[in-house]
Amino acid sequence: MKEMQHVLSELVIERVGFGIFVLDRDLNVVMWNRFMQDHSGKTAEQVIGKPIFVSFPELPRAWLTRKVESVFQLGSFAFSSWEQRPYLFKFDHDRPITGGVDYMQQDCTFMPLTREREVMAVCVTISDVTHASMMQRSRDDAVTQLQQFADRDGLTGIANRRYFELRLRDEFARWQRYGGEMSMLLFDLDHFKAINDKFGHLVGDTVLRVMAERVAKAVRAQDLFGRFGGEEFVLLLPCTALAEAMVVAEKVRIAICQTPIDVNGTPVPVSASVGGASARLDITSSYEALINEADAALYTAKRQGRNRSVGFA
Image (cartoon, rainbow, N blue to C red):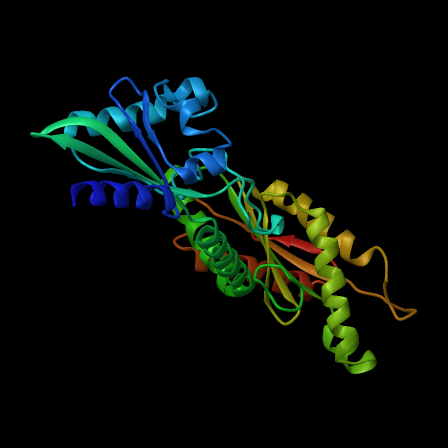
C-alpha cells in the first residue's frame, strides 16, 4: 500500500500542470518535476544536486535568496504574484505574441517542508498565469481608455470642463500650499454663431477641431488645455506669471487667426478674444475666483473690439 502511495505521489508530481522544485538550505536543487524540465529544457539529472544559480544564472539571485531564507527562518509560506514580479524563470508561453508579454507570467508559492518543526527544505511551485495576466492587462487598458474618454471633449479631444476643473482645483491647492506663480487664459472664437449660421454646424465643428489642434501645438506640454463649452476654451499655465501668460495669450491668438481655416475648399476666417488672470496671494480666494477674473478680462477684450488679449488688472 505504501509503495502504491509513493508511486502515485510521484506520478502526480510529474504530471501536474504547474512547476515544482525543491531547494535545500544551500539552494541546491533537490527535486525537479516534468513541468520544470519541459519548460526549462533541463532535465532533473542536469539540475538536481547543484545550486539553482549554477543551472540558471539569470535568476534574480538576491530576491530568490531572500524569499527562500525567509521561509527557512519563519517556517511559513511566502508568495509572489505576476503583478509583483512577472516571472521567475524565462519560460516561453503558448499565447499569441500580440498579447504583449515576452515570457510566461508566473505566480510563485514558497512552501516550507518540515520535519519535527524544523524546515528541511523549501518547495517552490510555479503556476502559469499568462492567460489571466493578459486578460487583466486588457481590462486595465480598457478601464484606462474609458477614463481617458471620460476626461476628454468628444469633438476636439482635449480636456473637457469636468476634468479641467478637477485639475485646476488640484493645481490651485498646490499653489496655495507652496506658492509660486499660476495663471490661466480663457478665450473664445469671435462671432462663432455667425459662422454656424452662414456655413452650418458641421463646418462650425470643423472650425472648433482645427482651432483646438492649432492651440495644442502652440502650448507647452505642462500646460492643460480644455474646452469649457461651446466655443469657449481655457488654458491652465502652472508656474507662470501673468506677464508670461499674456505672451502665451498672444501666441494662441495669432495661431488661431493667422490663417483662415479651410473647410472643403472654403476659407473660413477665425479670430479669438483672450482673457488672462493670475493667482495672487491674499487676494485670490479660490480657483472659481480665478476663473471669474479670467472671464472678466475676456469680456473686456470683447468690449474693446475682439481679436485681442487682455489681462485682468
